[in-house]
Image (tube, helix red, strand yellow):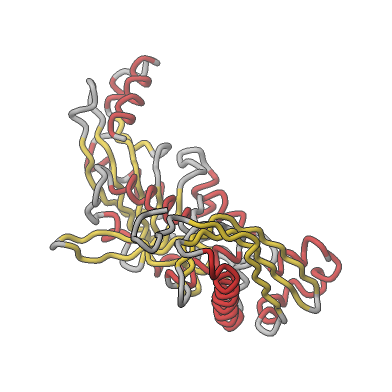
Length: 352
């Protein structure tokens, strides 16, 4: 990653930017605490130097300001270098800031051209300053590791993978609430490191609650994403594929999930395992739905389906949807349409 940033410097130099390019400091990650008019912003940056990139270093800077951009611009007083945000990988917002509302941050990120629309967003339990200063586990850059962590976590249905543009669309959409990855800090071998710890639920642009890893996975499946592991009493299944069908109108909804599962077990009890998997996932979905309805948070998108298929009905009920969702009748049906097998062990202990 650092060498890739060095290539950017070389391009700028060849394009005639000269000494100005050599003074650029590339921002790889941003942490935001506080509120509009009083932001405290931390940035992980790479100090670019001419040459092959071996002399480049990652450092952490802090600044305050009225906006995020103002805070970052104010860091020049400490560095004497222009900060370049177009290659930032991730922006982490503290829980308190997210609870106060993400709209000002989203508008600032998307209004100008200094931030990439693909910038991944996340909420952290601790302050963003503490989270951004955590030690990377295997990468040179903490921001790059956070991006990789979110992308890999989404593939395993541990959490969502949402960039600035996608989250803005979620916040503006009808009948569905937004979600973001939730990060926490922990001590490992005497060092503070960052890890995924579920999913942050929103109501409009304000953070509402946090789902743990189990409920986060259930929500991802209910949203139609495949991946992750389903554990039942007698087996462990990999969710290899998932098809979602959602029907909804004023009177109620039916959510159908059809799964392709992979099991490391004997094919002799195929039917029993399929039934067990269907029951286990249906129970998980039912439990999560109870909590979402108690929170009046339609993160699955039942209301969105009504808005798409029954616009006249939605026009009459959309403004009251959060309270209506609390008592909205929903049927969840789970079907295992294919069960495939991993490694099978024969009676003599040899792999089959």
